[in-house]
Length: 67
Image (cartoon, rainbow, N blue to C red; front, top):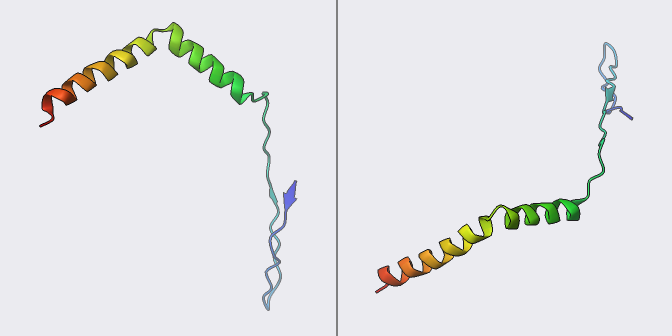
């Protein structure tokens, strides 16, 4: 794919620039499968327990510091 910008005109000469854009995605991107893998890793690694314990401790701390 080649893009040619607008031709520059001047009294001496006109100049054209050619820019070639090369882009390719080599792998199949399956966003839902990636999200499912991330969620399964979150559960299997025990991070869900750290999240729940953090919520509980945060709630307790907030109740102690609230007037």
